[in-house]
Length: 230
Image (cartoon, rainbow, N blue to C red; front, side, top):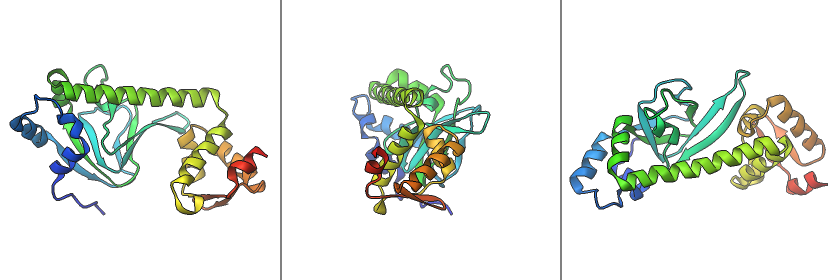
């Protein structure tokens, strides 16, 4: 079932991306032309927006929900590169047509998402003529580069169990009852490991009383972090 289209998507865009229009060059008519060039889409959770190797013809701007950008190895294992949430855009899409002939990753709607899509040609034009738009894109690049550097550091220098414990703790803190709704494969994809390794670590932690494994979810014990340090 499709999500409900907001009654005024243009106003929602202006609210989420107010910083794009901070420059003096954004006169009323220019802003109106920009908003008219956007294509708004409701996207169901799990919908593949772009597959690795496909041509990228537009740049997404997320107004609600979240888009996950990830790489898939030949073995089928996935690793999450970054997520695009409200008020953010996809930097890889911004690079399509300017050095990137095809999208170098895959993008999927992680939850019900409402997004605006700007044609790549229009985005390239704005980069050259709008200082505020250029500042926004450069800011996104800097933010994502810092995220990717942190990801590389985690994968290269931190043990799998440490990465898994940190991810579970962060996700549990966002939910009631310290329950994380995810399969072992989904956890493996998030931290860049294999399902077998994740399952083995979780089983060991369950035997130690740190958590309880259920079908499709994991519930952390009140003393999860303390049990792991014991």
